[in-house]
Length: 269
Image (cartoon, rainbow, N blue to C red; front, top):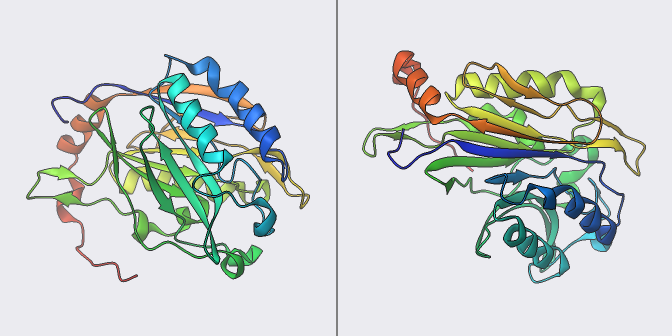
C-alpha cells in the first residue's frame, strides 16, 4: 500500500444508453452523474455510452475536439471526479472504440480497445489498440479496459515490479455493452480476473434494449481480491458508489503471495 493511498470511492453508472443519439445520452448520463458531486473519486460509465455499441461508425463517431469530449471534460470538472467510459472516435480514415479517462483538471488518458468482437463485425469497422495503460488516482494504480478484453487474461495480467516494489495496478476496470444472453461469462470472468490478479475488479455494463434488439442485463459488479462481490447491480438503471479499502488489499497480497510464483512472459502485439 502506498503511503499516500486512501480509500477510493468508485461510482458505477449503469444506464440505458439511447440508440444513436449523442445529445440525448449527454443529457441522460449527465443527469445521473451530477448528483455525485463531492461524493465520488471515480465515475464509471458503460462502453460507447454516447451511441450504443454500433457498427454504423460514420454517423456516430466523435472527434477528439468534438461535443462529446467537451461535455465529458465539463462533467468531470463539475463533479470533481474522474469520469471514464468509451466512445466511438474517428481519427483520419479509421475509427476506434476509445476509453477516455477524463480528469477534473481537463487532462485525460486514452485507451483504444485491443480485442474487437468479431462475432458482431467490430473488427471490420474499427481499428484495435496496441497499448495498455495504467493510470493513477489518489495513490491507486488502475488499469482500464473495454468489454471483450475481459475474455483475454494475458492482456489483463497484473505483474509485480520487483525494482519498483509494487504491482502494476490495484484496480482492474472494464466498461462494457455485454448482452444478457452471455451474462454468465461476464459475471464469472470478472470474479476470476480479481482473483488471479490480486486486485479489486470493477465491471460496468449497460441495461435496456439497443437498436439491434439486443437485451442488456446490467450485472455491474465490484469484486474484491478474493473474487467476492462488494456490490452486484441488477437489470435496471442504477447508480451505486462503493469504497475500496487499500489496507485490506495490501494485507491480502502480504498474506497470500501467490504472485511470487507467477510465470513471466512477454506480450507480442
